[in-house]
Image (cartoon, rainbow, N blue to C red; front, side):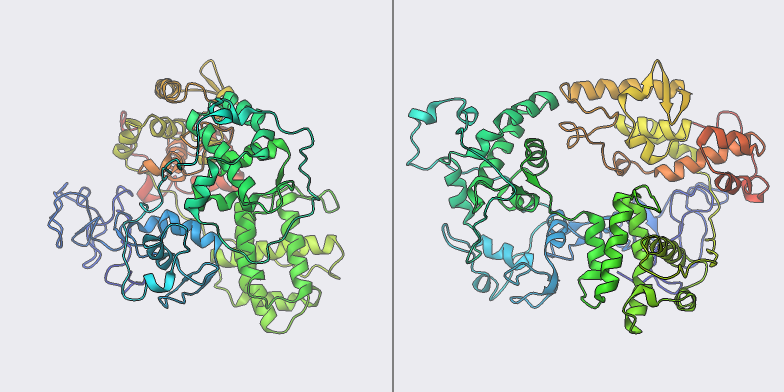
Length: 597
């Protein structure tokens, strides 16, 4: 991957100045338009210089498959070298993404590569090669399997559900012939407690997966019987399929086999570890939580990011570490103690951590042992080392302001050194309109979820977060009730809403999820879909589409700031950003009737 920069031969090309959708035709020599928007055009794009394909032209004479900075360029996984990953996923397959979140980075003992290694000091590629030659009942021999060569794979095709044959000693008579084996009543003396004495293992050894699957067929699990009523209730309320219900029961039996103390509560980390045995994670966690048997010990994404930035290096002094952990606790959970504070969004906390990390590292290298030693001059010196007017400095200033406000409120520092320091403003970009043809194409998408999401943003200016958190009860009689506003839905939105509801009822007729937009993962639960659904199937991002909608409104009303303030819930500063475009020579209102979707 070439490094970005003005002199890089194949750096990421900018977008076309006219449509703001396609990439420019050429960067060297510089052309600021795509072939569709070239003056005198549109022109047909030339064939790719490498594969000679005449479709999907990207930039610089290359198609989207051949250009190394294209989001459709296929390459090898950084972790296991598997072929078939894309840059939008950081060149990482799904299995390696899970692997990187559970194992530290190091040097593989068997191949010498720097990668994330397991407890056996083996990278995932070496371990997968060992599993290919693993014999039943034997541990994988990683050294012998990777001695001479390694077998590469295609990405996202390694882990599949494996069917275990029924062993010969299983007889389908007696208790095995009962259809409701997992619904049998548990013993009256069965108790699961948080303070149960746990038997620690002398030697940690992973069980053989094949032997474990065979033992599942004959295991009589008290945990399964204890949670049987809750599993049945979940399956009835949330519309679980028979396969999903059986997968949860099998995961509960797996936990009972693997746990050294059967009467202790179940740690969430033990449930997450069931992935290596084809276990079901999220649904099993829901059942255990409702049964009161779950102990949460899996760090969230923000906590993992916090540990990676501050804790794992071990260079942070004890006082600073305790202060930062207190700050993280208050930011995520809020505080009833003065100064009172509501919980912040995890994304906001991540930005604060990103800004604090280089500043705190500078103070640690200078020998500081506590934040009580930090003065106003230290802060100004640390901020001066960051580029002025950049987002990095803006994140650092906001993080320091939040940190010292909490520490001063808890009387852990003598004075707030951020007091009197004005926060620098970040230069905002100028909103740019989108190509109406692209919006029309997405409104007519074959995916009903994409068509509805695009219509809600294109006609009513909803944010991406509002779209994926929208619930069925928020829409009544063709009107959307959102944040105290009563919005009459446009006719194109109502037609796409009807199409999506028909698709939803046909695909998930028994779902109890109250959210409007659901998918295969969220249909059997009550949680909203992720922020990338359904936008990952669309060529438009919700933020750019919302900016296009507001930009069109401000130009259509001749700069009526109060109108866009009421329609879209903007702040005064946010509305002024769009007002500045009214007199911009490149963004004058020249739309003709019928040009909007």
